[in-house]
Image 1 (tube, rainbow, N blue to C red):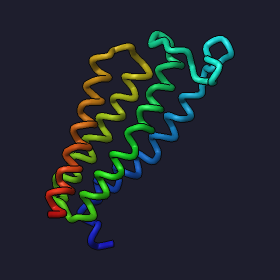
Image 2: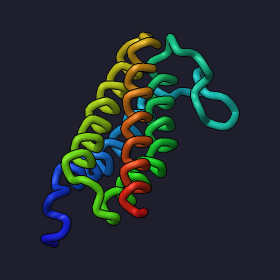
Image 3: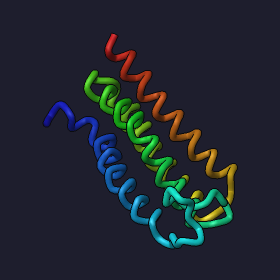
Image 4: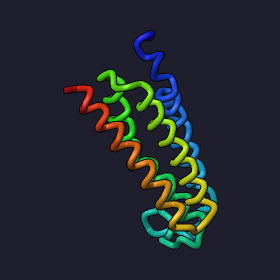
Length: 135
């Protein structure tokens, strides 16, 4: 475990992500009714509806999980700079929490997009750190 001690913030971010995604999943089912659902069971596309926005926040988190986990693990396992790995993982979590709140509580597309872009840049940076450290 000593080898991973330097990555404590990154590993904490991973644990927080593992908590956040199921919370968003539980939140995404609240308020669904026969009137606001499609035949598939998902809410009708309507960003004015908080039920739809909750579903999108959850699905967006699910879609981002694979790349975040892969990039973070690659960076840690290749021994990339702990400072940068911890920083990008922590900023990713902060951006994604902010994005989830903006997604669920508001219709502010610009704020949601800023959170998405910040999280995406962090994932890409982690992937690059992992690639550089691997070679």
